[in-house]
Amino acid sequence: MNFDENEPQSVREERFAAERADARAARKAASLDLSGAHVGAVIVTVALVLLIWYGELVALGIVSGAVLLWFAAALAWTYADGDHGRHALQRAYNLTF
Image (tube, rainbow, N blue to C red):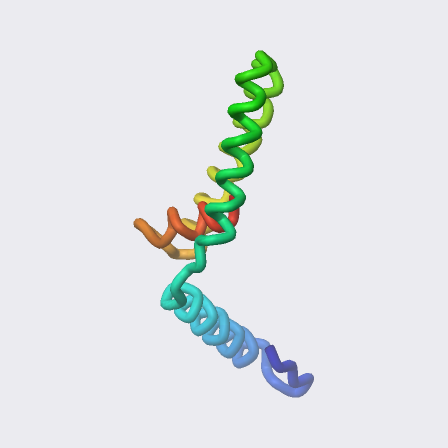
């Protein structure tokens, strides 16, 4: 975002809004690379299975709750960003893992 001191505030706000809209459109149009997220999901799954295996149910609840909370926050953020449907779920998954 470029900044000009002599520019009126209304013009600056319009320009910033247009730049944010362009960035949002580019983010929505870009395909997501989920390979890193899949690796993260496998690591979290293995950790949860190990917690079940060793009977650490309190730790299991804490870890799974934290992951669920993080995913819910990421999904809310993607919806607030104006993304809906499958792409919003993919972005939240990518942000979580």
